[in-house]
Image 1 (cartoon, one colour):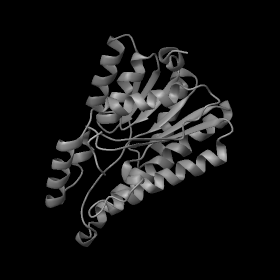
Image 2 (cartoon, helix red, strand yellow):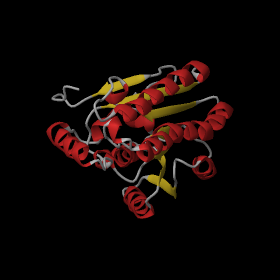
Image 3 (spheres, one colour):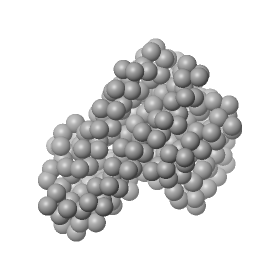
Image 4 (cartoon, rainbow, N blue to C red):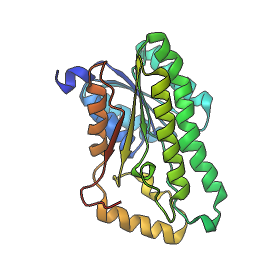
Length: 250
């Protein structure tokens, strides 16, 4: 079965779709015939994305969404069902990477990462799971990180904690609902996105920028991995994909 045939017609909701991995994934899946619901906080970016997808013959709607609010994600899932009649894939992509040493005690940033990276994923699961259970089908795709495979320290200890948590949550979810519902965790290395701009600790931000400059690969590298997971037959569940720039050591 060709990729286009396998993805075409599937209803896909993507969080954090206004830039980076989310935007790139939306464009690729739309080109393959998926029907999209793209959500993020920036309305203008979403409007432009939807306009470009529809101008190219694709199908997409958007909704301004804050993943730290469970009600926002419920509304996004409701939009998918009311617009297209179902939801096939929930891509929990929104994330924050605020790198700083633990000794800097940037507690507010720890809270933000927990709220976006962990609770945002949980809220996405909570919103989509009843729909998937009613349909007896569905696919959760969650973006973790290579920092969810190996602790990125010093500096990324809390970020790694959130990404290890996401990996554990998705694996537990697979075990609980995997008979009919698929789960995929994507664990990327340095990829071109706004994630690298999340550090406000000056020395850490300088390090992160240099690291990405030396290593990063385009966002569509991850988009293709996501499409690969979606295109598999319903009885094939790609549970984890780790991908890095070839030159990246970490």
